[in-house]
Length: 171
Image (cartoon, rainbow, N blue to C red; front, side):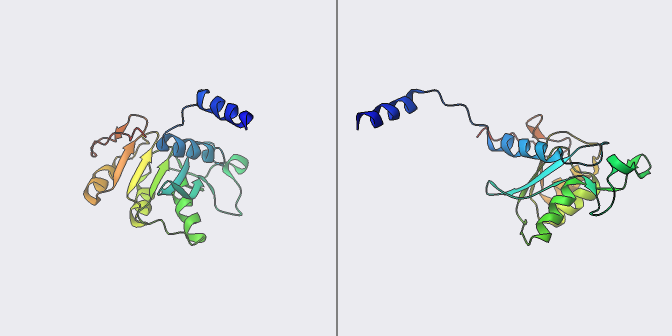
């Protein structure tokens, strides 16, 4: 019996490592998912979450069964590679393919969504978009405000330009 008491006391007195908050946790996972990207022009990862549970992930890559940009080169139109499906779209598609309801969920993405991905996110019923880096497209900012979708810049702890100010939850 005394051995158990000593072990228990040792656990209580040992310093515990600080746990990362939920935003950091999910954004770290999105960053890891981005390492699977197959278009070297931009590595992006996305994680769809509801109630602190991961529902789906996605990264930017080619259509299933088609060659990857990293192997076959890029299909460029107006300076953009159009061979890839974006991370956010792939996360939504993966959820649909597996019958996972994502309405009312949140999405964590390493870069803010382009206009086309924003439209998919909005119509999928995702209510909050957390992103790590602002990426070009400002069109979605005004539309998000009108629709009541929060766009939250986790790199700066506030919503992106022209959107509601919202600070990161410190938990």
